[in-house]
Length: 290
Length: 344
Image (cartoon, rainbow over all chains, first blue to last red):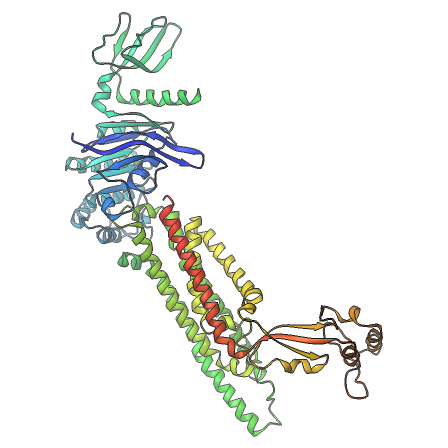
C-alpha cells in the first residue's frame, strides 16, 4: 500500500456547544478499503461530510488526495460520495441520472454505468421513486463509480437494504475495488459485512478516533487473555482495551507489543475483528460514562 | 448545469407558461370587448345624452355581474400570479434539494456549489422576469378602459397591477422564495413565509411606504362641499383631514366644535337630517350654504387634502420597482451566503 489517500490531524466539528467529532486523526492508505465503524452519533457521517467538503471543519485539518476539501470542481472530480439517505431525484429516472452524471462530470463513463445497471436488471426508464431500496442504492453506487473517482466515501450504504440487496451491493463494490485504483471508506454498523470487504479499520466512538489501522495488524496485535481474577498483567507492553470479570476469572482484550510474552497463568486466544471493534466501542462508552 | 437545471425544472416552467397563457386567454378578448363597449357608450352619450347615463360609464360597462366578475378576476389574478411564482418556483428551488438530500448528490458531482447555485438562480430569475413582464404588459393593456373612465391607476389596487409592478413583484417574491428555502430548508415553511412576506409587503407599501416617495401636495379649503373638487383627476389622494383653528387635525367634529356650532348640529339631528363621520350636512341656510359648515368656517375650521399628482405616476412606478430590485439583490446575496457558507 502506498501513500495516504486521507490524512487528518485533530479534525473536529462543533455544532453549537456539541462536538460531533473531536480531535480525529486518521490516515487511510491509498488503495485500501476502510471500514468506518462506531456507535450512532460517533461522528461517522460528520467525518465523511468533512472529507468530501459538504461541511467545513471547526478545528484541525484534513488532506484528501493531497488537497484540502473544498466546494470546487478540481477537488470534487476525484471523489465519489454516497450520502446515508441515498439521495436521488425522485421525479427523474435512471437514464436522466446518467445524463446528469455525464453533464456534471468530465470523466463520467456512460457506457460503464449503462452496462452495469442493465447487468443487474435495473430499468433505466422508470422514475427512481418506483425502484426498490436496493435498486436505488445500486443506481447511486453506479453513479458514484461512473464518475471514475480515486476515492469513494460511502455513508452506511447498506443500512436500509435487505440481506440479499446488501449482498449484491457489496459484491458490486468488491468488483469495483478489484478493478483497481480505488480507495474506499465505508461506514456501517454491520461488522460482519465490513470484514468481508475491508482491509483497514477506523473505529470512532464518543466523537474520537479509537483505532485506525490495517485489519491484519489489528488482529496480530490484539489478544484475548483469560486468567484467574487475582492475577495482574504487567503494565509495560500490554494495554487493556476491555475487561470482564466473573467471580473467579478475568477476560481481557489487550493490545500486545509484539515481543512481549504472556506471563504464566494466562491463556491466550485469537479474537476476531468484531470482538476487537466491540471492545474499543465499549471502552469509549465506559470512558464517556466515567 | 444549464441542461440539468432545465431538465429538473422544465415542468414548473411549463405549468407557469400555461397559467399565463390561460390568463391571457381571459384578458385579451375581455380587454377588446370592454374597450369597444366604452367607445360604444361614448357614441350613445353623444347622440342621446338624455337616455344614456354618461356621468357614470363605469357602471354602464362594469355594472353587470359578469363584467364585474371579470374585472375582479383580472385584478386578483394580476396580484396573485407573481405570488404564485414566488411560492411554486422560488420556494422549492433550493428547499426541496435540502429536504430530499439531493443537494448532497449534486454538490458531490464535479461542479462547484457556486456554479450550481448561480445557474439555478439565473434560470429561475430570468423566467420570473419574463413571466412578470408579459403579465405586466397584458394587465396594463387590459386596464386602459378602466384607466380612461375612472382615472384611478395611481390608487392602491391599480398601482400594483399595472406598469412595472407585476414584473418587479414576480422577481422579488421568487427571490424571497430562494432565501426562505435556503434558510429554513423546508418547502412548506419557505412557502408559508413567502406568503407572509407578500401580505406584509402589499399592506405596508401602499399604506405606509409608497405615500412618502415624494412629498405630497397639500390643498386646503373651507368646510363645505367644495372639498371634493380640489384633488385633481388621476391623482392619488393620500389623506383628508379637518383641522381646527390651531391647525390641529380633529377626528370627530362634534366634540371639538364650539358650543354654538354644536347647537346647530344637534338641531339638525332633531330635524332628522343625520350627520356623522367627517362631512356634516344640514338644511341649507338662507344664503344657500350649509349652516353647520358656515358656523365651523366662522370658528376657523378648515379641511386639507394631501395627494400625489398624476404626473408622478411613472416616477412612483420606477421608485417602487427600484426598491423591490434592491430588496431582490439583498435576498440573492443572502441566499448565496446561506448556501455557500453553511454545511450541507
